[in-house]
Length: 200
Ligand SMILES: Cc1cc2nc3c(=O)[nH]c(=O)nc-3n(C[C@H](O)[C@H](O)[C@H](O)COP(=O)(O)O)c2cc1C
Image (cartoon, rainbow, N blue to C red):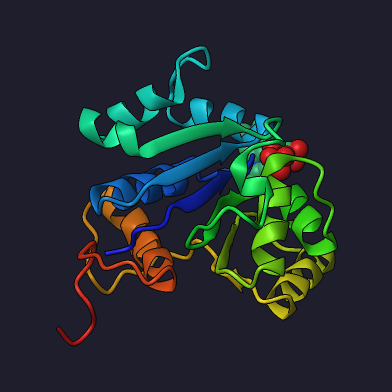
């Protein structure tokens, strides 16, 4: 079991459900999660979850099937809380996932432009050589997007596009999303049984 927290940054790209399903899977395996919401991420998330932006983020998790007990394992931070633990390399954690990652946040991470808690925490991950999984969402990609992904890859991050797979015959939207979440958990070395493994 993984005993150190995982940091999940949610930026303003479409696909908030990927971040929410990831948080659900993490807390269900007893992992503590520090969620960092960008301002745009919060707006897109509440829109896509069809919820009132005045509601707390915990309501999104509850509506997504996260049990009330598991909420104790979630800390929610905004991009403005720059003095939070994850802004420092001295705070130990097992890695960070930016999911979904907007092209703006992608460019900030690629350039080391750490002007908010989300981008600073990703920058810290790279400098401390901790796992950083970036889940970029845009289509199509222009050359700037692709070059930013290459820069993050060279710096040690993993670009993991939300490209669902179909060979496990996902029957629901959630099951389809989980084909991506499963690969993220694999990269964090967190055991799960979200989808059957090929050959099992
Ligand atoms: C409904 C909605 C969907 C969006 N989807 C995307 C997207 O898929 N990818 C992207 O790069 N930007 C998307 N954007 C634009 C970003 O939210 C915008 O660039 C924002 O400044 C990103 O800020 P952040 O990276 O600090 O979260 C979307 C905006 C809205 C309102």
